[in-house]
Image (cartoon, rainbow, N blue to C red):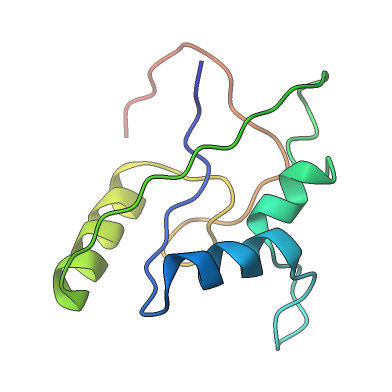
Length: 103
């Protein structure tokens, strides 16, 4: 089973943005950063025990306005747990329920 945990838009090269997510520990404002690093260091998810997490990344090359629109639609439609922008808040737990919630 695969669970989407993060969606983002960048104007930089994918490899540069991926590297930031894999290595960075804090943002300029002091918040925890590096969404991939959180998974690798087992900071996320905190409610699912076990080993062997795999991270998959999909990329689309779109015009900036289209990319931002698509990101906004996805964040409005689904609650990605590691997104804070346009989402309720970042969460430490992964929703692994099979129940489909209305809303």
